[in-house]
Image 1 (cartoon, rainbow, N blue to C red):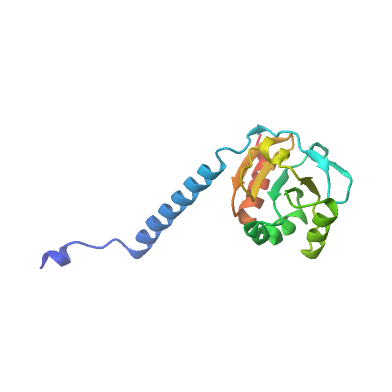
Image 2: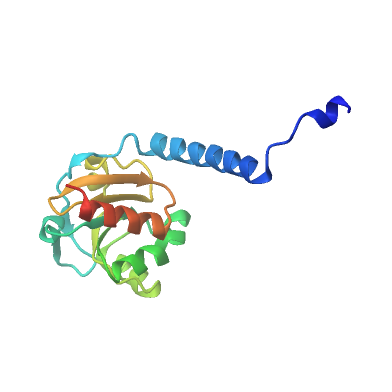
Length: 173
């Protein structure tokens, strides 16, 4: 027997599992790096004029997990997430924060044109984003029923991942 035949190759599934674990580790490391400056612990205040010209305060949502989603009308990645966030808003509490995206009528037009029905707070000067440690959008926070930040991510997130975080926030002590 030659030396080449003496060494058995690992089964294909094992190589795939190792590759998948490596990719997952890289993705998680990148997400951790991007989210390292985001707020943690008790959520900073989040209140302001909403896209309808009224007043919105995220503390009114206490008692249930809430997805707080920072986005910009000018952000291409945010537009990719619009449908995902809209579907989550159909059965979970969601508060959007429109970062430097225009006046209330401009943001309302954007929401209407893109069939987004979630409540949205305007952040024309980035004050709210700075308080939450947001230096780039999209950025998403999952708050538990007491208003503590349980999860924070920056960049593209999947609907399944956001829903899982909302579920976990509702079941964590």
